[in-house]
Image 1 (cartoon, helix red, strand yellow):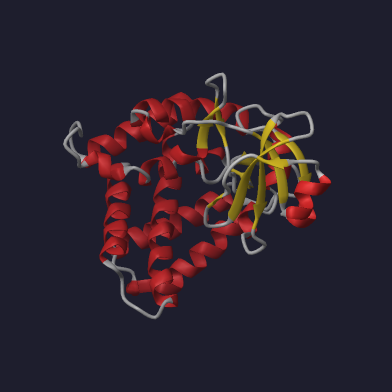
Image 2 (spheres, rainbow, N blue to C red):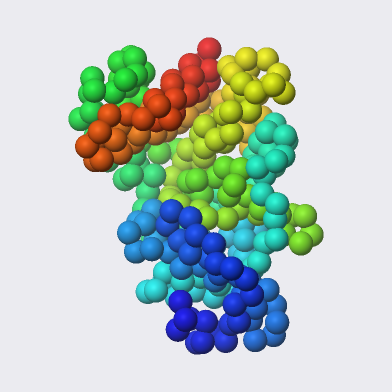
Length: 281
């Protein structure tokens, strides 16, 4: 990190921030312009080509890339002061995200791995888990069957963000909403909506919730589909596939740790089942 700061003539301008896979340092460049220096850990394969996707988007719908060093997994980005969409009414947030789809879902660059290549492996893992999943077996079988069908009929090869949810959309100084932190792939744009359903689910049972959890999930789903101009059936099928795969990852994580499911993990799986039911009712 220090080498990059020196080479790119940057000055740290605040405390560093980190997530699961990257470190971000607020900086100013030689002209005093604010930016964010982001370095991603080598183990995060899904964000390998983040710089390529950001370059392809060119600041349209996503944060602008100013400089990159792919070998060191380093990116210099425009500074986004925020906020993110975490405190925006969820339906309004879905309208904003659905409105970003058109700018993000541009023809993919050839270096991107395909959605199909990831999902095929994840479906194989789901099949191996078999009856060990604490999910009705019909949903597991349905997700595997739907996933195989979607892979066989890829539905266009656009640049897919892959992890587009409330915390990964931030406002710039002009109040323009922009996507950050893509896990870019080449594939079906209908792959995109699921994270907007499984994040912020607590609100759907809280004191300000309107209607049932099912109602809230369906409002989000239909808002994303309608605003984003997506096909309802294809988007629904991808939500089922991604949500059941997500539940499978929860079980796999507990297995790798050599333990049973924690209550929070059991709750996550229950929520995955609720989403699967809601989009199909």
